[in-house]
Length: 134
Image 1 (cartoon, rainbow, N blue to C red):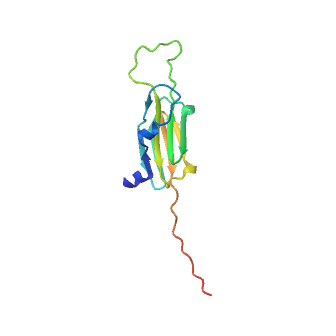
Image 2: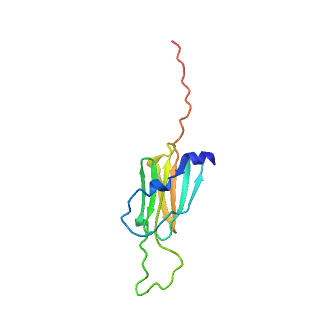
Image 3: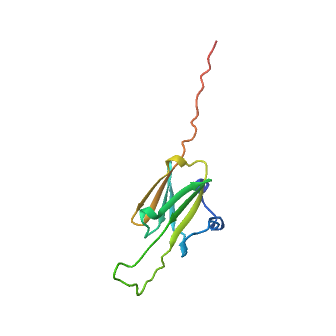
């Protein structure tokens, strides 16, 4: 578990909130599960209600940022009379260490869950150097 903490770390909320928003409304921190395997990390973020086109994932200065915008409206000819949950956007950020291959990060969104695959760089393998006799 300690090795996993060295691979990816939660970004402090103060640093995340320094970005100015251009939309008003609530912002939620999505629940995230992170799984570690020998060759990659898999991150699952619960972001129900997002459209695939409203999810923005960026990697800048070792910070992986996830943002999902929600534009929920009641169906045509209906009026909302009662609701038990709040609607808002999602935002979360993680700091990556140097062991993640930034060029091969992949993302998939299905049934309200964003899945990110973060491949690990292959460690430098020991190399035997032959000695030539002259």
